[in-house]
Image (cartoon, rainbow, N blue to C red):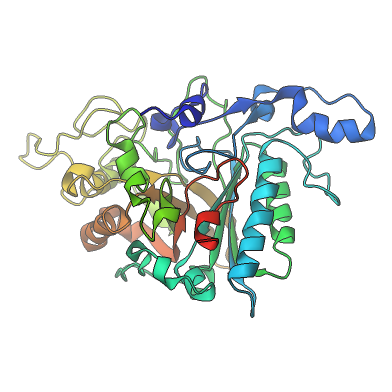
Amino acid sequence: MSDPVRDNDISRRRLLGTVGAGATGLALGAAGGAAAYAGAAGEAPAALSTVGATGIAFHGEHQAGITTPLQACGHLIAFDLAPGAGRKEAAALMRRWSALASQLMAGRAAGDGDTGVALDAGPSSLTVTFGFGRTFFDRTALVAQRPPELDPLPAFSSDQLDAKRSNGDLWVQIGADDALVAFHALRAIQKAAGDAARVRWQMNGFNRSPGATGKPMTARNLMGQLDGTANPKPSEADFDKRIFVPSETSGTKYDWLAGGSYAVVRRIRMLLDDWERLSLKKQELVIGRRKSDGAPLTGGTETTELALDKTGPDGKLVIPDNAHARISAPEQNGGAAMLRRPFSFHDGIGADGTPDAGLLFVCWQADPLRGFVPVQRKLDRGDALSAFIRHEASGLFAAPGGARTGEYVGQRLLES
């Protein structure tokens, strides 16, 4: 059955298949963010562009920030509940955070003491998405409601994980098309945590700005490759089944997760100096696609299916057997699929001159044991790209379904 909230959220500017996700929202215009600030000062609001005026609905069947188009700026932040804090404190925190996210996503001030950082900016497609880590259920005495899909991810041979920048009781994903709007939300969320939770780690990312190209295009990562070509699309009949926890969960001890999803978060360092020493031809063989337009090496356009059995005049496979596109293809993994929604990052230059840069990988799926894990296991065993990347942090979080009007995110769990 059609979901009017989600149907109304389909982007008029960007589609999931071209930017890695898809759903936008409502143009709030002068009645939204800028007016809220200016009205308090008795001034006429500043005019907003389409980018600034576009807002995303907070309430709905699913949380925003999952199928929302990639935003230009993002912050990922994990919290641990403070010592002594439990279910009561967690419920109060999620109530505060949800009310705050609803205000901010509508382009309104954060309440008394608002910093004014986002003054005149409008909502700028801001989304705030919440998730619970495995340890959250221990801290809140809700272990019986913890789904088995939150079991720890297996170890992978290429992992070099920093425990201090991994996991966490609570996870918040913030995205916006304006850097000040994104930072404003980050600061407001952190302040609203109060004494209930403490920051465990925080990461900052970016993507190409919306409207920078004449037509919507798949985002490029810092290796220059199109990233997200094979994403599942809402037009596909099994999209919801692959990405969202089914409504059949209702009536069980996991009913709080119906309409929700699981996020795997990985900080992937790109060894750019090594990558950039490769010739264009060798880079394309590593990936299995043309760098210019993302088309398979076997021909066609970006959306053409891989001809995995095609051989060249020399009798060798055109797309090598260890090419990233081949190994990660759904047809090579029993149909396993996940919705990639990453941000690039650059955290400076090391003393040796190498950039600390790469991908804040975020992927969404209905079941990480059927989505991320089998694909990553295959990549771990023989992906040609592995020589040029390093997984440095990891997390797995369950994002509850969207909050209904009058609810807060996670209420069906915390008040069960």
